[in-house]
Image (cartoon, rainbow, N blue to C red; front, side, top):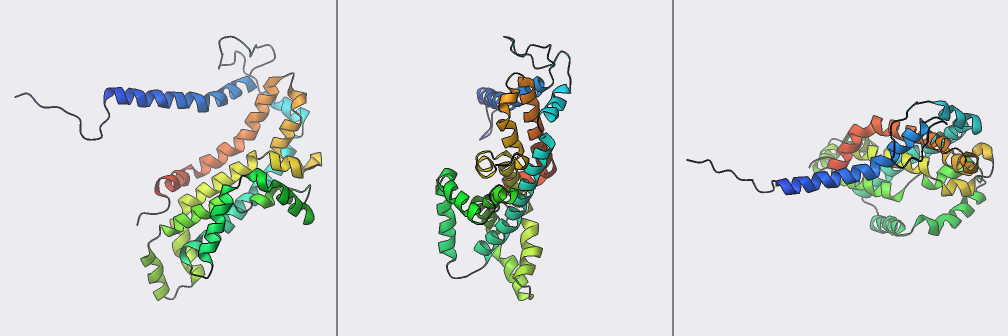
Length: 284
């Protein structure tokens, strides 16, 4: 008797699998392709043509001289240090502030909680360009213009990060809080011993997004900073773009230098990042 073969419900057929892999290949080319091209260009020497009709992703004679050229042309390490200071302030502010605010909105009961949550949601509707003038006036009024703290202050607590942490804390079963409350645990103890261990995944998502947003920001530092010694890396590279115009290899090398810290942060937190993306917090 011939064995009946068939696909189960939800099993992809050959055509669907081919379509999926095709779409994945297109996305891979669009996302990874520019990065590979920039890396390849940064490693090519002056004698190698980077404008060939057929793209050549493998340098014929790889060299690190372009990275040294960037450091010789602009104070790239000083700019990088400034960017790290700004990113550290923003990450710390979001990790602490968004966690506390998210926990309060999710687990505490107080008058005006719904109103505050609605205001947080309303701020997400406004694009950043609408409030940038008021932000600059506020920062200047505080005497923080042309300072790294003034660059970091507006992004120190992101409303989206607060809502992400609130969602993570809301996923914690209420019975756990009730049991801790019966045992005499106060709010701080419930946050430290119950809340934080269960939202590490979402907290890593907040940390990564905060770091990338602060590190890659260009418009706000350009508005606030006037002293070249305080420039962040993105502003420093773009401000001196005219210097690099005759040698796109240096531009590519500068881009790679700016990209390395993002790779390091993501590599360190990727395990918690994917946990936060997949689970949101914990399973009830």
